[in-house]
Length: 131
Image 1 (cartoon, rainbow, N blue to C red):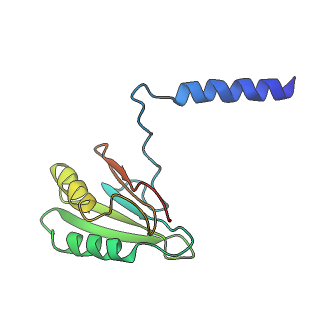
Image 2: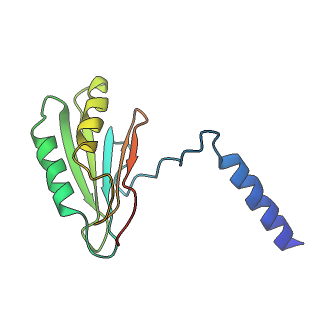
């Protein structure tokens, strides 16, 4: 009887979490991404983060002090994984920061997965994987 109850509970939970849009739910932020106006999590496929994308994001953030009030980086993995937590200068600056950061990221994550989230509901996740 217990296996049946577990299966039924799983089915109910899956139904409750489903969305009508057919889109995947946004991924959770990496460690250190909670409470950020914009968070960018750089993951790894067991070969380190996408260092080129990280450098582009760092450069973009440093060049937009009119939009970016603070940047904190939280390392969380053994291969350089990290989350960049961005505080915008104002609520109106969150969307431009998010879109500016996303323009620095690859669409397909051949080197490593990257996720960007914003308080205003923006979410981005690289597609694909190695190979």
